[in-house]
Length: 343
Image (cartoon, rainbow, N blue to C red; front, side, top):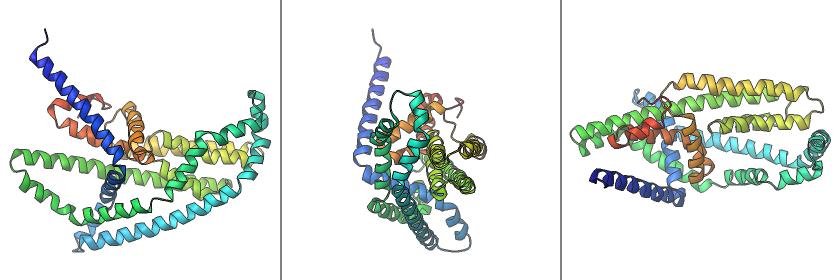
C-alpha cells in the first residue's frame, strides 16, 4: 500500500522533472533572448569592481560603465580584425599545409593504418571537426545583432543594479526578504570571484601560450594565444583543444621533431600550472562542484546553448547548486553534486 507521503514525493519528483524539461526547451527555443541576457549579467559582474571603485570618488556609475563599454568595443573590434587576418592567412596556407601533412605525417599513418595518407586527409577534411571549425568562425563573425543586444542589456543592468538591494528589501519584507537578499549576495560573490579569477587565469594562459609559440617560431602565435584564452573558459576540454592546435601546426611546419616536442613540453605544463594549480588556489573552495558534475554540465549547457553554453556551464551550475542549498527539499541534491558534500 502506497502511503500519502510516498505519493506526495512521487508527485513532487514528477513535477520537477516535467518542469525541468519544459524550462530546457524554453531556454533552447528563446536562445536569442536568454543568451544575451546571461552574457550581459556576467559582463556586468566583470565590470562591477572598477565601477564601484570610481563610484567611491563620486564618478557616476553610468559614466564609468559607458567608458568601459566603449573600451570593450574597441578592444573587441581590434581583436576580431586581428583574428580575421590570422584566419585568412591560415586559410590561404591550407594547400601548403596539406602537402606538409602528406610529407610529414603521411608516412607514419601509412605504417600504423591501412588507409592511404590521401584518404586519411579526405576523412579529416570531411569530418565534423572541419565543419565545426568552419561553423565556429562563421558564427563568430556574424553575431553583431546579439552583441548589440548584449551591450544594451549590459548598460541597463549596470545603470540600475545598485538599486536592486533596496528594491528587494521593500518588496520582500521580513525574514523572507532577508533570506533572499542573503542568497543573492552569496551568488553575487561566487560569480564575481569566478569571472575575475577565470579571466585573469585565461589571459595569463593565453599570453604565455602565444609567447611560447612566438619564441619557438610556430606560425600564427597571436591566433593560438587568443584561442587559448577563449577555450580556457571551457573546463577540461578547452585546455586539450588549446594545446592540440599549435602542436599540430608545429608538426606540419617543422621537418624534424625537436620543435614539436619542445612545444609539447612547454605548452602542456602551462595549461597544468595555470588551470590545475593556480586557478584552484585563487578560486578556493567557493564553487565546490564535483568534477563529474562539471563534465555533465558542460555537455548539458552545450546542448542548450551550443558553444556559449560550454563557456557558461560552470558558473550557471554553481548558481543552481547555491539555490538548491537554500531550499530545504532540494538540499540533498545540492550535496550530491558537490565535491565534498558540504555547503
